[in-house]
Length: 467
Image (cartoon, rainbow, N blue to C red; front, side, top):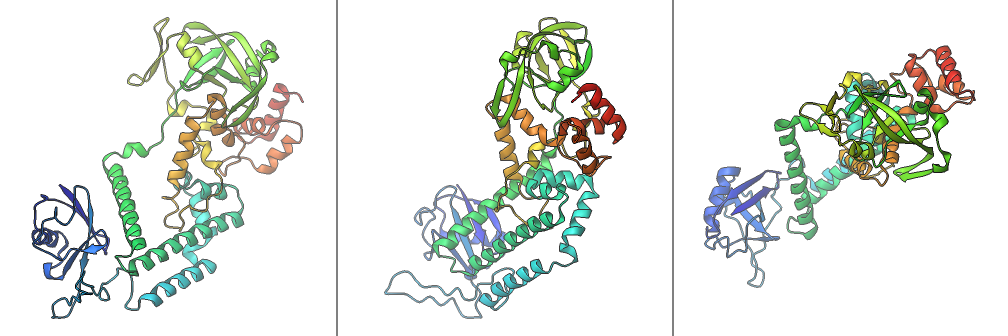
């Protein structure tokens, strides 16, 4: 059976033993792994020290997968002094246990550490200067993308352009981390057989196992941490080129109102099908186009479209279209196969994706629409590692949302309405054109299309959508 052994110095190892092994032999194995002499070693299980070295592990109640604590009892020359209490369990003196990171004075150490941490937060030094950290991250797109992935709350504050907001979020996270560190030291200084201390040790072991699992994944399976290029294909609608997003999770095929205008098919929209799409948020349905010809490769297929207002994706081929034409996604060949005709059309490479999706670090907009969470980890050295669990949970919820079209819009909408530092225009330019009566997402899309040229973007908007 396997028994996990942990020490107060955070060392963890697993021993493969038999249940009939005597405690004395088990300690000898622990000595090999931990370098702690047997005569200075105490094994604790379920909050109680195991004193009878001749009893087997089975007799002590240790079973497969159990966790025991190895404690190093320091003493000067004399044997460990065990005082009995009414002839019952011996009382152990834990005053000589050394706690890693703690000084000889235990309580003052914790309090002084906490006060110094608070002082450092209130008067941040150069290494904790929010403005310096902000400039450093903005100057490195890779760090910005990593921060957006792992700590969306801090990334949202960073991209807001408000230094005070970013500073407050950063300090709150630093303070939260310092408080958890101080709590950890207090628990390590407490009686190791206390019930609360045992819970803390168990949670600490669980977190270390998670960290070990993540490190192993980074070392042996690093590709799982990379971004995935979404599946787009080139097609034509009513003779106009469109990049269509393949989404097997979408119930229906949808098109944005802007794309319908470009393809000159808005005149075919049946407004009797208007309504509201509910899912992750809501989105207005303008209506439905009952039949339009789509050209994929040399094939001309027919499909219906649900037209949505302010939709980020130009066109999304849903399950209705894919099933009707018996389409097959072949990821080995990286092609979409039209089953009814046998035509194969390749998926677009990353460099061929729509321009707004090619911006480094902004392929998942859901990370910029995160509610405040006081439980995020902090600290300038850990900001790139924290918050990933909440971000991944939010993305899983997005993927499983009720109506796929509105879920896709929720994930992508923030990109179309956000001015990033890399954009060749400012928020003032966007507001100036918005005042002419155009939608914000359309304004930003045209400014990006014309690389920040305000005059060309305005002319294009007047041509497409005369207010």
